[in-house]
Image 1 (tube, rainbow, N blue to C red):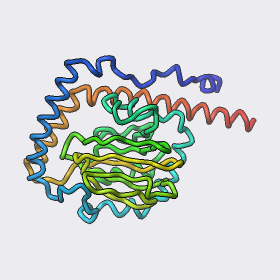
Image 2: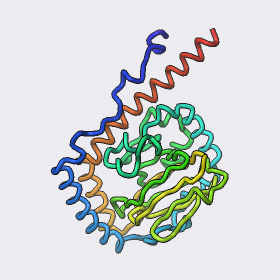
Image 3: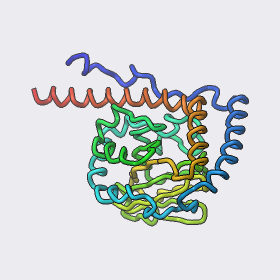
Image 4: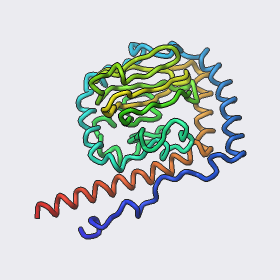
Length: 276
């Protein structure tokens, strides 16, 4: 037990922010990739089997009602995760390319799935949520999105039309009209237990103009499309996994998982010691 008690967070590498984040080569590849994705997105728009509007009615996705039906269980698992709030990484620590919209750990992300892969250690803290998420066809990413009081996520756009995104409200400030998201020209506040779906390739931004924390379950899955849309989406995902856009977060998520596991072991060891 002494070994567990002596585990220190600084023994595990902190999420890395590559020094080359602003290198000319990286900027060039990112710019080229965006142009290619824009071309592919136009094709995917024509291939889409669901509306390509900023917000998409949940009736198009038969697997979604269970999330609203079970939101309190999901919230309770999020509350367990929040016991280790200090060890949850900021979005900028997971994905260095997000440095413009996520700063000073004001937007924390506890990731359960990344690029279609389950994070086994994190998933143990939210087993019900993880199991429910995996009923979604072609799930890509999922995480508890934790936004600090008073934080504003600047306007930005997602990279591919090939996915759609769900938001499930879990812990929402009482003055929820001041805790809201704009997608294109539409604005929605979050509500506890409510769910909506959006297309994040539209410009969007978020405000939490309250003195309370906001927590939602955020998850992405493949947009329902005809054959050529699905084919292009699969091809682009495979290409993306060869780039730093995928490789950097993958490495950082592994480190973040290890840090969280160490934090849980320290907490368990302390409880055991107190009970002796």
